[in-house]
Amino acid sequence: MKSFVVHKGLVAPMDRENVDTDAIIPKQFLKSIRKTGFGQNLFDEWRYLDPGYPGQDPASRKPNPDFVLNQARYKGASILLARKNFGCGSSREHAPWALDQYGFRAVIAPSFADIFFNNCFKNGLLPIVLPESQVSRLFDQVHAFPGYELTIDLERQVIVAPQGEELPFEVQAFRRYCLLNGFDDVGLTLRHAKKIQEFEAHRLATKPWLAHTL
Image 1: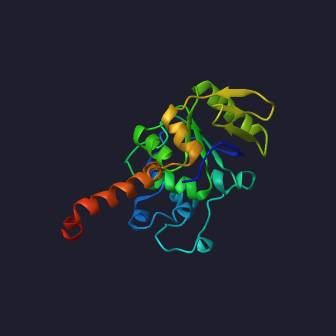
Image 2 (image 1 turned 90 degrees about the horizontal axis):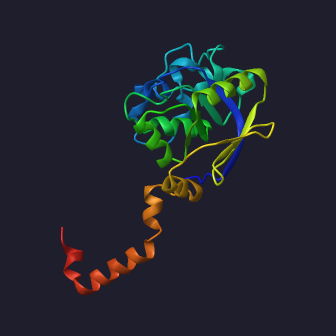
Image 3 (image 1 turned 120 degrees about the vertical axis):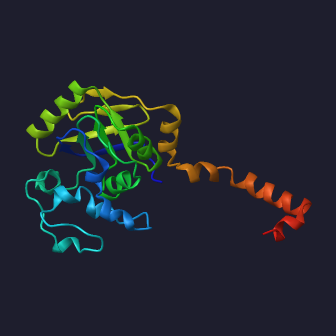
C-alpha cells in the first residue's frame, strides 16, 4: 500500500450529497477477480453518456461533458471534495479501489458512511472529515479559482490552503500510523516476518509430522 505523508494536489468538487458506492463503481464492474483496473470506470454512469460494461475500451466511450471529472480544469485532480454521507450504500471495497486507481489520494467531506470510511484507510485513501461550513467554503474557493490546490499534511493533521490558512482534522492514531508507513493488514503482519519464520522453523523441528498432515 502507498504511504501517505504530505500530498499536494488539484481539487475536484463532487457537489452531491449521499453519493453511494454503486455510483462510485457500478455493480457490473465487480465481476473481476483482480484488484486492479477499476479507475477507468469510476463514476461510470455519470462520466459517460453510453452504457458501460466490463472490457470496454475507454477511448470508444462517449464522455458526459457536464460531469465534473470530464471538465478540463479538473483534469489530473487527486483530491475529491464531497458533500455529506459520501460512500453510503453497499459495503464494496471496490469503491476506494476505483477512487485510488483513478488518481485520488484523499476525499474531504462533512461525513462518510462507516464501512466506506474504514475501507479507505485499508487501501491507502485518506478520508478527511471537516465541518460542513468549512467544506462549503472550500467548494466556493474551488469554483472561484481554476487550478485550486490543497496540501494535506498527515503528520501534522492539517490541510493547507493556497493562501496559507490551515484547517486541522482528526485521524485515529493507529490509522494515521498505518497510512504514514503504507501498512495495510498484510503489511502489518509482515512486520513480524522474522518471528513468524522462527516460529515455523521451531514447530517443524519439534513436530516434523505436521509437515505431512493434510
